Length: 392
Image 1: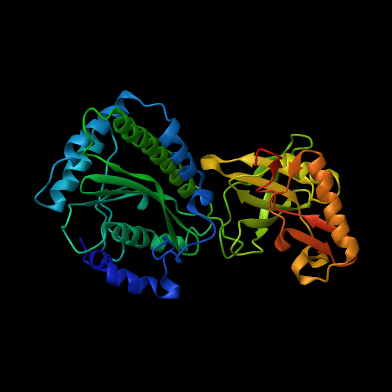
Image 2 (image 1 turned 180 degrees about the vertical axis):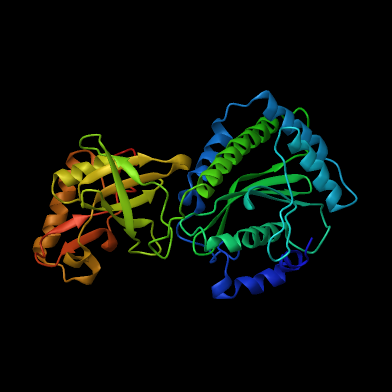
């Protein structure tokens, strides 16, 4: 195995790599090395994996794999290679073949699953104290090296990959994608594999995770097979990838509407502009909570944008689609001189909203947009904290 990922995985050397803006890997190490759009919104497999970790119906094969890994990972091994062989053997019994892929730079993974060299699962299997390198940093660099040559060729794909980290007695999962540069997000919790035989809760949790992993691996295998058999590779129209959802059901007529992302106007927020097939412009927002009822009630009063669609996504995400407000025609409340009539209108609108049984819950300068042509006209946005009075 080439030494570069091993040495670069040492904390001090990885920190130097992360300190260079052009080479920073978005892995939240340090905490400022992050991207606004997480991997769970760049490919559905990661959110589905997390949902399956809780809801997957465990099979006898899942229990068998969990028990085999429990026995093998509870042992100590004289070398890292001996641990790797034992873990790979457990997976091979379930027809999950872990191979070693060597990159163009001569680096090699501990074990991976791939389609024509495109890794969709990468593992790192460390014996405790076997080196000075951090195994998480190492596996991040393995993903970087294994996908580097494909990033330019398949720039319309997020190159999704499940990462499994086996470190001594523990196993953890992460999701990796490529959006102009590599991004890695830990998934779920670290699982101790030396649990007591009477700890049935932990046994089930491990089996849930392994069953979820098998489903995710199959999904990604099919994804890459389809991606690589396309007659032509699509070219990315924009300098970045956008979230994976591309359609919603209309709240007005329940018809399906496809849309195309156009831009991300605020780089630190999960807010995007898009366009429907009929040319209608929309705003798309991704949140973990939202009150559609409060939004629609406020829209009926004429002080919120029309809500076009609302879609539940894996892992607790919601996609909110609304009419797009022409930003050139409105300004933030904090940027204008508020007239008495504007203040009165805001207060009156909030009273009406409260009378209907709802509160906005987050009124501040950034959530009130004022018309440039009529200083008494405004729109309320951001109903993430809104809801029924007494319930939020």
